[in-house]
Length: 117
Image (cartoon, rainbow, N blue to C red):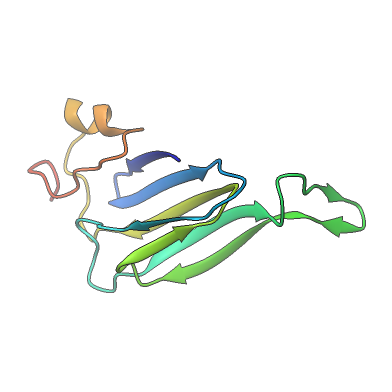
């Protein structure tokens, strides 16, 4: 599993996770900090039935699915998939600091720090 995260000026967090395993889903406990009151997470997932799946004119073997998740508890990253989780913090970024720039691409995102309004 590999992960990367970023937050934009509007306070929207985007976390992308790649599960390269061709044999098993990965279930992880999801602890988001700074999620706004509705707690909705938009999930974008790219995957197929197998690692050999392809898209051809007659059939789409690999596709993008969008859904909502409540952002609580365990989340399953499907085998051989790319998943983006996006949620609003409800807080705009007051300024861009070196610490924020350093966190882009990191697996930990500190949304509740002093540079957030």
